[in-house]
Length: 420
Image 1 (cartoon, one colour):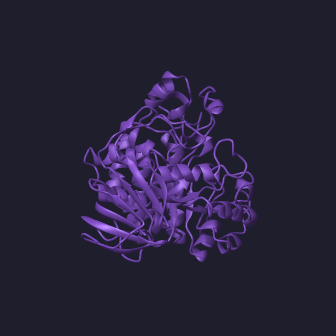
Image 2 (tube, rainbow, N blue to C red):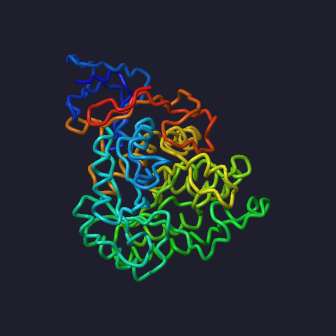
Image 3 (cartoon, helix red, strand yellow):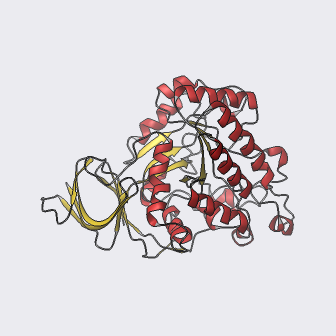
């Protein structure tokens, strides 16, 4: 048994925000209240700290199988635990792709031994080629929580329409990477003043906007539950807002880098600020924040995308896109959203725990009796310096930053999986 004493419990499911004790027995929360007296094997003094449901990241790349020099399921899970995450959803762009039951079960089995909940999304199309649908029913039966070809847009409208109809029938969501390659001169950097200064073609907003517009209307037509992944364009935010108002079951993700940085970061951090879709202008950043405030964007995810140091040392045109994100996500959320007054801490936790779980039609974690003992304990205000990662990769523009939100403990299924 673990007794957590005197923590400030913030729970976006119950709406709780008060000082209390929490008693864990095995994998369950068995009691909450004031000045609990039960004997416990471990007592954690959480005075001055936040006790909240374990975070859920609905968009990570653990690179396993196939690219384990970048990350593997074990190291990715350790990075997640350090970041306060007790549940993650891995993307399907592995090698081989998670387009078959064998690969899906490989990740599931390895994930069972990590200490956190590792879910594996299935691919929409075979080999991520966008030409033929996977056996979505078999993958659903094998435990896939949803479908995505993330990293690659689905350009065949008929194929996507069928995928939406099938996902609707299966009762599972579909998540979409929205960048039309025909409209991108060079990926990873917003097409604008910075790309011009660098003589780098760039990726304009319209490359995202046209696919978001298309897919919002297909979602409305089919009734499928659809997520616009890692939204970056102010126009796309407005398109999602409109589609929601029309009745589409449409959702959207935002990443910490998209609500923290602008394209000027590329001038300072080089390839560590190259990502798909790119960070854009301050106007886009503010539109994303507004979308988080009003519910247009209902999930914060990391798009944790580890790469080797050698890969990121290449030129801007040759380096891969993406950054590590699991270990800095909560801190950036507090720094960029809570401290400036855009969101309450309760709202931030809703975006990082309750809403991703509900998108995947899971019962969200909460700090209530009989709930799973999946918790994160952190300081909202205490600063910590980003100096090293437990991930295999360190491709991050946030190295050297001082962030709030120091995490003291991550507890999953009643076991401490991270302790500072």
